[in-house]
Amino acid sequence: MDGKDLLRQHIAKTASLTDDEFDYFFSHFKPETFKKGQVIISEGDLVEKEYFVLSGCLKAFFVNDNIKMHILQFTMPTWWTSDYAALYNNTKATICIDCISDAEVLSISNEDREKICNELHQVEHFFRWRTNKGYVAAQKRLLSFMNNDAKTRYEELLALYPALYNMVPKHLIAAYLGVSRETLSRLYTSSK
Image (cartoon, rainbow, N blue to C red):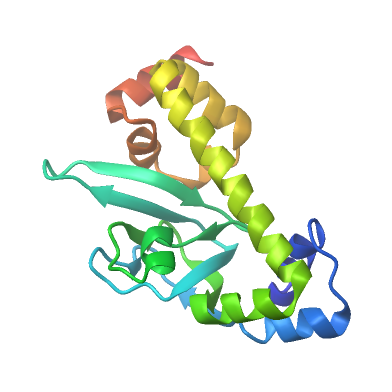
């Protein structure tokens, strides 16, 4: 399935666009290809775009003062990513996004997204729905961190995203869960 069809299928789950409306919407996207390890957004960058992943896997993360990586999000096909605080507030990036594997994405500028949302109610509806869904997921993850032990968080991650375990190196899953690689190995062994 090509990128246009994948985006169309993704949007159609939430919003109803005519062929002409979707073609107009799609005309604002730019296909981009990135290699494994390539940085898309670095801390301090101006952020002007968000990305819809067609293939591959990305990670959004920051490194604290103790040089410890904290992963905020993995982004798999049909998921979206950016430094949204920087994108929406026109500030410099506070997180980084790079490629765990080779990736193909569609990017759209903040300016174009806002323009289309003002022109097409269904597109605005889609982006509002997507933002709400992302907020709910972030809230659930935060509550899990505050309430659950590492084993429960690991089991939740595997239940929600079983494909992730084969796409993402184990040390990155450990960083996402906030545990060491050794702890992740023990969790993996005990869950078999």
